[in-house]
Image 1 (cartoon, rainbow, N blue to C red):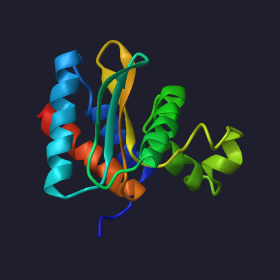
Image 2 (image 1 turned 180 degrees about the vertical axis):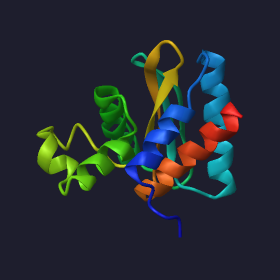
Image 3 (image 1 turned 90 degrees about the horizontal axis):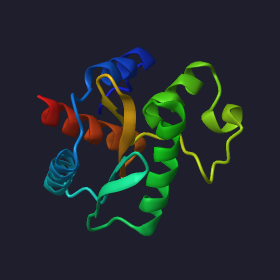
Image 4 (image 1 turned 90 degrees about the vertical axis):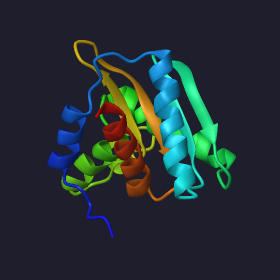
Length: 154
């Protein structure tokens, strides 16, 4: 079982996983890599990459459902609003002894601080979009995204 990362570990991931640029071709290659990783695991996920409000990549694998697309949108909105990974936003609230739902005052039908959406950050530009996975338990969604980003950026 994978240990739950600390807020500090999650923040370090965000500092480390930064692009020098992010093109349409990068979105295709990164999304395709995520599809390959998910297929190897027979993971029933949906995958989404957005940049500046535009969907650049989407895939739904066997076993995923329309609910996964709704979760993707809710998790992505957290990244867009806070500029941080959806899992990190939730972890910060938990570290304060509360929950995102209780303390953010945001509509839970619109925002979900559950793992699986990660900011696409470009050096010199900041957060320009989000990469999101939905279909697994939240830490597994988060870790699948991290694995793909680490592989892609290495």
